[in-house]
Length: 261
Image (cartoon, rainbow, N blue to C red; front, side, top):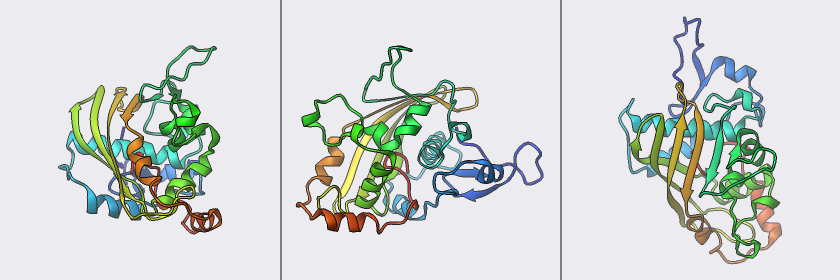
């Protein structure tokens, strides 16, 4: 899924002029993409968190590094691009996302999972936190959230970001199976709960079917959401006005969503 930047003299690809060592953004992409916040995002804060806290440092060019960077690129696009046609990491005609076996079945198509447009519309938080539990048992009600409200809530709770790393890759293309770790620090309010400073950490398994150009066609994610909310709901109740004040102090897009940073 991840692409390398072309030589500056190449006619096939233009040089990488933006991005970082984990996510490549091409020159034509900067100018021709519809960015959610007006331009490509910065990941300085979450990259620092990632480098300080990762448990694995994969060799350059290894399968593990390739998978790790591919997922980071996909998450960046999902969080910061507004048109599916601008994505480089997925096959928009075939893409489907399934989380913990959650089925989204439409009467018209009779299929499983979320397609690319649905995933983009919901946003990464809502897509990855949807579940089939009865409403009274849901930690987080994705159906009541917007893209903006979900990102504000988690970005405020973990202002340094929610870092993501590959722990192990079990199989390579075309069906890539990997184990991942996600972590951040609860240093800002979350939905009326005061921050505790504790680490929010969980592990999961991803299964990704890719095409011949390594674009994702089907993605399955398995993890336990209670590992996230067991920490975020632990803080003592906080005045909503104070929580909203903190919520708007954070910058608009210096890190990305909780599932692939």
